[in-house]
Image 1 (tube, rainbow, N blue to C red):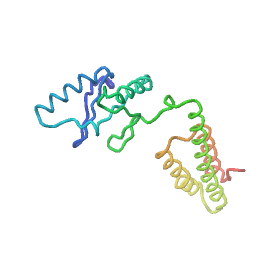
Image 2 (spheres, helix red, strand yellow; image 1 turned 60 degrees about the horizontal axis):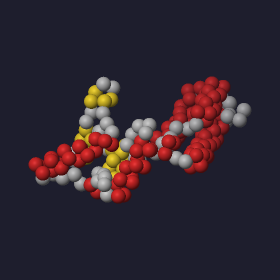
Image 3 (cartoon, helix red, strand yellow; image 1 turned 30 degrees about the horizontal axis):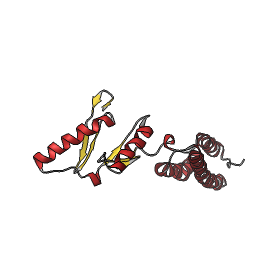
Image 4 (cartoon, rainbow, N blue to C red; image 1 turned 45 degrees about the vertical axis):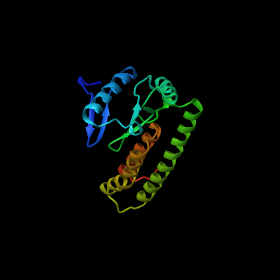
Length: 185
């Protein structure tokens, strides 16, 4: 695979190896090379620990085809939609993998999650706005310490909030910090 002009064929950390192929058509040659390597070194590819992760715009169609091959026994490696590499999830299920109904449900769940988080942050901003002794720096620190930190923490473990919620929070932070006004003012 070529990334920014650099050809990457594999990455390795300890006994975890990731091999990058250009297409599913390269799988048989890869498996043949691994078999030859195993014969020479005594180190075998463990199919039960090996996964096949497809990336790119045609991954969904190819994934379904490869799952059929795996189920029939003609493909050794199990196709997956996502994998964890050194603690990082790669190939997380994207909207392209979901049916329209599942996508709508996921979007509604995502919005409900962020509505709850934004409400908590705005409640904290209201309490901060009522602390009349805080300077602009105190309000800025308070909004960052609770509001922004809460949002970043949640974004790290889920997904970014919808754009309209980000815009709302930006305006409410400015209102609080610049003018000492509560979000509902």
